[in-house]
Image (cartoon, rainbow, N blue to C red; front, side, top):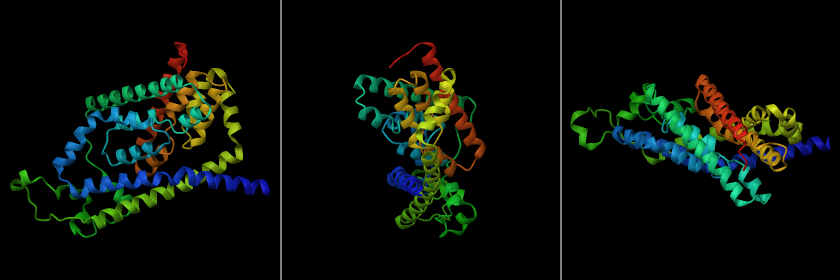
Length: 326
């Protein structure tokens, strides 16, 4: 009974540690999205989307930052179609989660750390731009903003002051056109959303998503505490020839324990460079949880997860084939 209580206490402690730091990231993201939806015109929104062409480069850079706050942010932004699919992949692939703190704690030589981070960053950029190029060729890159869909999912009621928007939330984007084109548009139902409504809506989204992450993370932590991180390690080293594929599967676990186990086994010499890279490329942390919560198109989410796994395994195998070492 004492061991069971210890497991629960440890799991709860890790759950709050893994979740609470995400709140500022989520709140600022939702605040920006609500402002974009309610305070800007279609020209401004289109300019934001055009600026997203450089998104994979920016996404890969911010993804390198330790922890997985930016992967959660990118999942939310992509669900609202504020950023491109390539940018989402760039962030996911470059996300280092707990890898960097583990490497620093173990006093890994700085050149080794920089090489691994540099490879992840490069792969994130390359794959991000490649995916965006494929989407443009397929003419699948012009999705309209879907911020209002997130509002409908979370019932934030940010359009409750406008009956027409309440019936057709997509019309909110028609309310704020640039002054230069005011003479060509019908502004009969224009209105101004105050910051009070924007703040209320951003807070509602943040609370609901945080609660979702908290519950799922607690369940995962309880499972990992019960099974033990050693069991994850045993799973990875059970078949050396398949270690790249297995490391990719472990990387899909939306919990920091995955990156901790992969990084530690690599430092212990149990995992090779290819398996380590595959697992850390796939590991997007809680970003995958936020994606599942924010983007309610399960088929799209499954394709993204499969493509993320295939990408990590591909580059991991490539590292093994060419005998690359860090």
